[in-house]
Image 1 (spheres, helix red, strand yellow):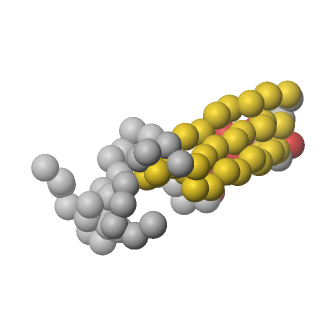
Image 2 (tube, helix red, strand yellow):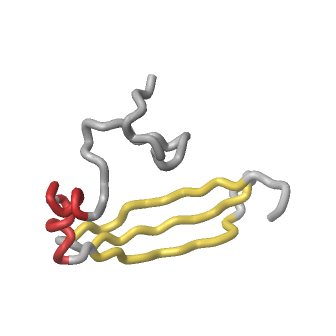
Image 3 (spheres, one colour):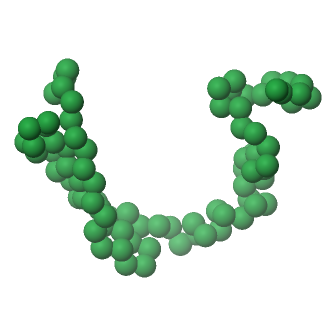
Length: 83
């Protein structure tokens, strides 16, 4: 598979409550199926609790109104005014 392009196709199947069935294929450019897969994902019952602003703050996530400096990595000088 080295030095070739592939096409990745995914399909959302049945959605029932916290469960989602998905499937997908990896195909060569000529349509030959190289890999097929199916999976079931189950959302944890406690997932709705993770959307709490206080929990995100306790985990160290920045407030949504502040910029996140991904290109610079960690902001080592938070008192510096960025352009």
